[in-house]
Image (cartoon, rainbow, N blue to C red):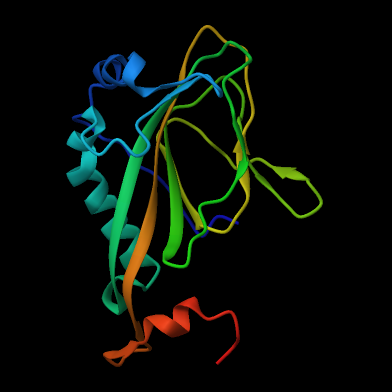
Length: 185
């Protein structure tokens, strides 16, 4: 399911500061017991946007997509406690214009928590060490299982949204209606 992987270190990141800025009531989701900046566009993790713009550009180039499209990305931080409650139910990030999703494991738990889920509900856990960065199709079902630890788990995640896609090496625009079509052209 993973189409790009690397170990990416942000040498300027003060992780403890980020955790304390995100671990406030404003970002707390009680029903899943996590702190998340998802859909908070003025959140403190926006200071990381320039760093992640360079990472996104890198993997888009290495995947051969960078010069064939116009894209945007969004990102959010999540802090999970190790109380055996924090989790994310099975979900995807698919939308007609959301192309790729990614996770940067800044501070992984003492066990693998992120997994992909196939159509028979089998779980597949990718390697998720400190600073591992994975990219996968936005339609891939995934979830985060709870864990037991006195340490928190911290990730930054995001999605790549396509604005335009060009066919092959030509600069012929692939009409957006084709991207949204449910029938082969």
